[in-house]
Length: 466
Image 1 (tube, rainbow, N blue to C red):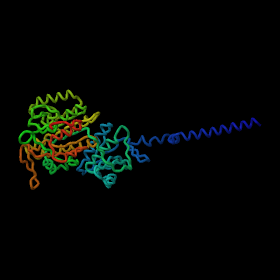
Image 2 (image 1 turned 90 degrees about the horizontal axis):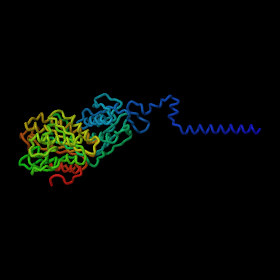
Image 3 (image 1 turned 30 degrees about the vertical axis):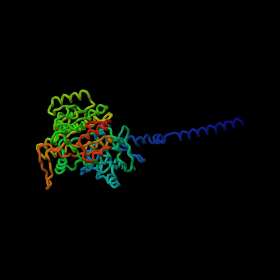
Image 4 (image 1 turned 120 degrees about the horizontal axis):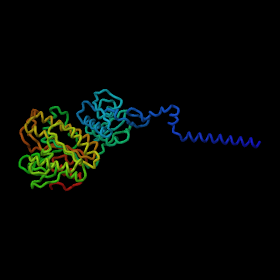
């Protein structure tokens, strides 16, 4: 009897232990393991294997294979959308090695699209119906699409913020319920200066009256004028004007990187290099032209090409890959321009770049309107791409201006244009800026103030002529 009771108790104890073991397993195993066991691994496709964007049951669109996306911009846009689309494609290619196609919204609609600005897609139209204030933008997922929306400048701002905040080493994850946010400006540490040689206000209007849909610099919020006088009588030349922009010193016509006493004066490019920044000088002219020379050399005669090139060669030899220098002599410049932006911003502590469109001046000297239009339009293309770049680098000041006006171009009462000179004039030239603090350029300023502002970004408050 006792043996039978003992046997019953042992069987009961074993049953309890078996039940406890099963409960422990059930509570500590991954539910996906059970699904895989039952379905032969069918759950494997839930996130990692989707061909493009994997939309989970949560609020997040996780983009796994970004190369399956197409970037879409409005076909009829006169703004910054196309340049922003091009820059986004270039950036993703540089970052991931995956090249995204770019198309306007006249193309057939696809499932996986990044929509920039006011496209004809329903997702963009829904975004456009929201209430936007100054510097407002939207970055939001809608199904498998990514909506990057903002008005005017903020179309580029949305792309820039998408780049700086969403594109990294991990998968891109975008909220489906995101709301309107402000563009996040940062304290300045970098600077890009763009100079349209010989470009006055009327040259811009001439181009807009002859096929240029918009001059993209006009989307920037701060607009002013530059006073171009040198220390010589009459109008400045490019050497003295560029020295003022590069060094913060008024000087004599013909002098490059020197004050009126023929003493070399430091350039903002040299200051940037001294603090460990990368620099770039790119021009559609030759490098011994007065404007690029003023950032790379110091000489009392702009026509001494041999000596200027010797100094430039010395800069290149001493600074190596910390400096990018390119002159194109009116050949296509965009490849050099993009390469310079990439080099100075990659593995960089900070950077300075000067870009010159040099041929507005040359054709204005000979009063050739059609080539002037083409050169202003080429300048505009570089400006649009640079604005997109700067929006992705919000700690960068962008200053767009000219060194002087050439040709005395005037708008007649009947709306036509007429050159009244074959030389430089003393007419103030336009200035457009973006970045924290650049609102100080909302009125007429001496050209020397440009160099002083840039130097202050680089930590030098006592720069140039007092």
